[in-house]
Length: 117
Figure: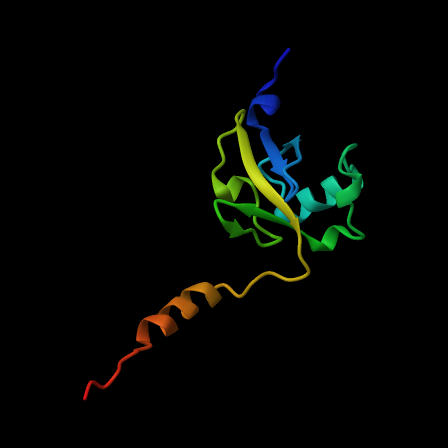
């Protein structure tokens, strides 16, 4: 029998860089850190080659953005009862929030000109 709690759960399909996938069920209250710890503690069979030494370096990417450790699934407004796909990568630190945008702005101000004689 399906309960209301089951309907409120979020199904995450995590994809590794290798292309391997695994589905997990989480509460909307679970944070990115909670998810990383759960996956680390319950590392799927078939992912042995990608095993990492610590949950603290596992990062989630959703819609092209790294999720900070404290972000919850509920804050992302993920549809309960449906499968949401995220990438799972091993990375020591998160990139600077505006590093890509800043780089683009710097490129936009560069000029390449030449003098014709």
